[in-house]
Amino acid sequence: MRPKTKKILFLFTTLIFMFFYIPIIILMAFSFNDSKVGTVWTGFTFDWYKSLFSNDQIISAVTNSLIIAVITTLIATVFGTLAALAIHRYNFPGKKAFNFLFYIPVVIPDIIVAVALLALYGWLDITLGISTVFPGHVAITISYVMLVVIARLAGLDASLEEAAKDLGANEWQTFWKVTFPLIFPGVLAGALLAFTISLDEFVISYFTTGPGSDTLPVLVYSMVRLGVSPEINALSTIMVLLIVIMVVITGRKMRVSK
Amino acid sequence: MTSENMVELKNITKKFGKDTAVNNLNLTVKAGEFLTLLGPSGCGKTTTLRMIAGFEKPTEGEVWINDQQVANVEPYKREVNTVFQSYSLFPHMNVFDNVAFGLKMKKTGKEEIAERVMNALKLVQLEGYIDRKPKQLSGGQQQRIAIARAIVNNPKVLLLDEPLGALDLKLRKQMQMELKHLQQSLGITFIYVTHDQEEALTMSDRIVVMNQGEIEQIGLPEEIYEKPTSKFVADFIGETNIFEGVVTNTQNEYADLNIDGVSIGIPKTISLVQDERVYMSIRPEKAKVSVTKDETAHLNGTLKEKIYVGSVTKIIVQLPNGREMVVNESGDSLRDVKAGNDVYVSWQPEETVVFKD
Ligand SMILES: Nc1ncnc2c1ncn2[C@@H]1O[C@H](COP(=O)(O)OP(=O)(O)O)[C@@H](O)[C@H]1O
Ligand SMILES: [Mg+2]
Image (cartoon, rainbow over all chains, first blue to last red; front, side):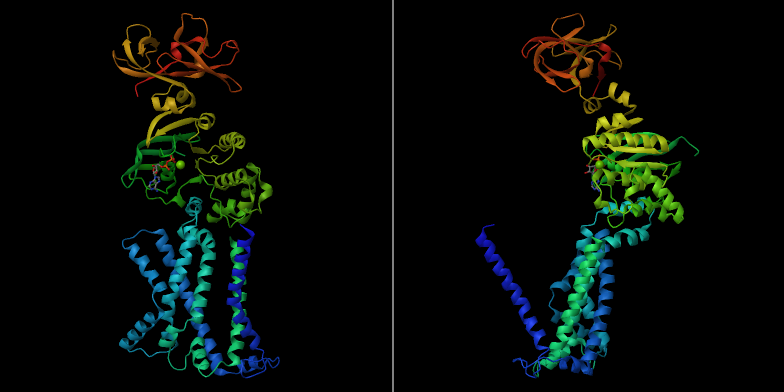
């Protein structure tokens, strides 16, 4: 590569990184700012973290979001992985259509899923609450899990499963001793994706949740209409840190099991 | 064991869609035998092996293992183990766990597992590598682990699909000997797949030559080499000179074969009919090249090239009909003969092999 091209590419990459991370860094910095209006730096404080943890509304929204994200991740990961295995391994009539149906949620706008679910709940006369949020979240995250796991399965040497059976392992043992450990990085990546998508999902949650069971993005949305509170900055900082830790751990796990 | 026959294939046919991979194959493998399936790539060797292991279901016909029809026996319940072409070691397990896998599936006791795994690893001389992951081993070592992983289970039959294909020549030769010794000392029936005729000739008790999903010939290595029954086998096994001619006389001790106007005596090992077109084959090491014509001389030509290959010198002779012939010479009687000189090629008629197709 010519030195000049290299320089330009380097500059370009740096700009992109700055574009991504400067707003986040500013946000994290202002979570320690001792001023109610977050535009000027007036001094260091932990006050916003303290008030965050004593804000029942926020704590309850975080709890709701985490419950929804964890359960969504479990359901989407289990069923997404099973569907991926079915599609990878078996030929059945209508396989193409089945496959296609699973991918639609990736490209379909969330708003359509939200409105459709809302209509369905209305028609079935179901009262909105935290439990009415799950179907939408599972519907959109399951496809991502499938995509990731199918990619991993495609790279799996089929003769390894045959080797296991050749050595006396039945279907069940073959799956748990060979197939699953080898696709585990994909399953983990899919789960992580499902978790983060569910955690910051807004549109579907906004439409399908009931009164008193706001998720975090829904609560933040209603709060920022009255101006960004530094408490939100504090909360965001905690979430960024948690997600960074999660990504680092899963990254390690994947490298180990490769 | 109630019978001599370890594996029997009865009228086996395997079709993939419209393509026939294996066509009406009949084969009996005796207990303790080293049997090789030999043939060019794509002739159906792997498919045959996979039907014995249970990974493919025959479209027609039956597979019998140890006097049991195994159509409804899952691969994991068959008393056979496979050494795969690509080794297929489990990448997430170390050497010990790889080799122990089969025993663990059978719920063997911990101590027995440790003992048998170490014994198997000793057999392949890798007992010092139990903690390594497969990717930390060389190709040759992975190969040995794959063998240890299979034989540790004391299978009745071991299926090996081109197990040495990925190794370099020297290691391959060494492993050929080791495998042969292993097979003899363990007394396991080996069904071995290769496309390397030399490998087949050195290792096997019996060779099955396959072509396009069918058996061309079954026999001892000497039979396959010395007495091929078809042009395909003669051509595929070793180097040879094949001529096509017309039978002109069948009355005498030797029949006469007219090859482009030259008459040559051939043994009457198969029934020959006047005016019939047949082939004859003569191995390079069975013929002689000389500068003086004697009464055994069969063909005359000009010396085209001498190629020194170490153990012998290959003499390429240009024949008047435009064909070339290869003769191996071990002495140096032709030292002074140069390209373009007239030479005579001769051989004993009994050394020729005659076949119809
Ligand atoms: N799973 C399969 N699907 C379709 N065709 C196959 C399959 N396996 C093998 N074949 C075909 O069957 C023939 C024999 O293949 P194979 O048994 O692998 O040959 P070999 O091991 O002698 O090289 C080939 O023409 C191959 O393309
Ligand atoms: Mg093959």
